[in-house]
Image (cartoon, rainbow, N blue to C red; front, side):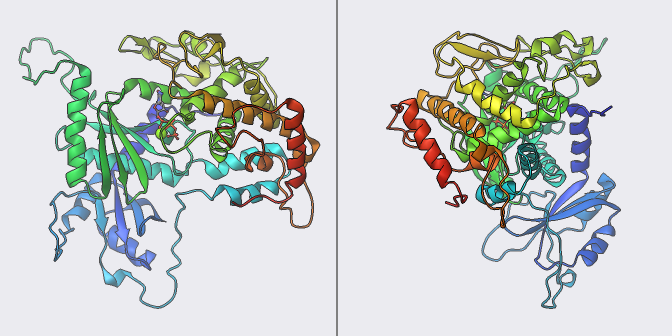
Length: 516
Ligand code: CTP
Ligand code: MG
């Protein structure tokens, strides 16, 4: 039987590791051996790795927090000649010690852990060498998922940020949520962070004591969140080493501070009081753990969507990765033998300790994986991918809303081109931002991909000397040939016969992957 680790346990372990870690900017050609020897003067090193991002960096995890304290004690404030510095001390350090550098002309031989993925057009060529579509999908998932090192770096950045926020709230924690931890994150995805003040002591009344803290009051929780984020955002902007381009977006539905953390290369979104999002992260994590096909299909659909501009890194009327994930989950619930259970079922399995009501929303669902009985669906990834496209190529989006609580579509409660009920805040539409044009593109692309996957030219491996002929999933990731999909102005669809003719033409031309 597979052993599951709960997201909560994972978070606790990673957070604790991060507290014992430092991030060090090293000189290029640092000698690894000398570097480690130098650092071990302060304590045992449990794990370390190097990576490149605007320079060479090392993440070093010590055995004890005292080791970090000892290391910091020996560190100095830099003296810069033309500028001044804010004397805020953090665990982001620079190593300026020439004796640790190899001065010979040779390469240092340092192994750097990649923190980004290979570009899609290179990846298409690699995919074409796989022997089945199932293997292509698995290989895509493996290539794009977060690595152990990237996940550690994410927790470390949260921990560094916590040190800044702790200037105001010593007992706070900063936790990653969203795709950094839900199992669906792709290397390079943004880092969603949640400032958690719930752990502050003194929330439980003690008997016999009637001494209370006097506190500033505000009109609403939202106002409190806004003022906290405003101050912390200011602090990150003014004092946070490596934090650049800080924007406070406090009037959004969910107020946030957005910035880039340069040493890690992460685009960060810091929110507060965002407990429901934490719950949806847990839910997605759980679904991803239940069956390996869930993550694989989500990765594939997300990658496909990105390749065709269905999703974008710029906010707008596009479908979001979160919406796409919920669409995949809904589809998997709708199989004739469901691959994953409905949220209602997960709620019914919950024990008393799982009960959770946040701002009036029922967020209860089972946390003990072993209580969940899965049905024995044996569909392959290839079948599922093809059926996914078929399913959404013909879904009655104009009338129906997707509901993963019930695992059923239901009449739309309000007008919106795409309606996906938020799993916990059930009166909200997850895809409220999506306009008709974007939904139409998605549907047209689903039609095209479903059709392509049913063609022998696409779905059979192409042998051949150099094996670079795109086939299977690789074909689906090539630029779309469907007329009218590319141009937003030309919205009127051609008659079906014309479309099929175009597709056949395009198949003939697809001998080489496009690298544009
Ligand atoms: N979220 C939500 N409702 C939305 C959007 C987001 O509940 N309408 C929550 C989800 O838990 C989501 C998290 O906020 O996972 C982070 O949102 P976002 O960064 O947009 O999505 P990710 O899942 O992190 O995906 P990406 O890789 O695109 O960042
Ligand atoms: Mg995100």
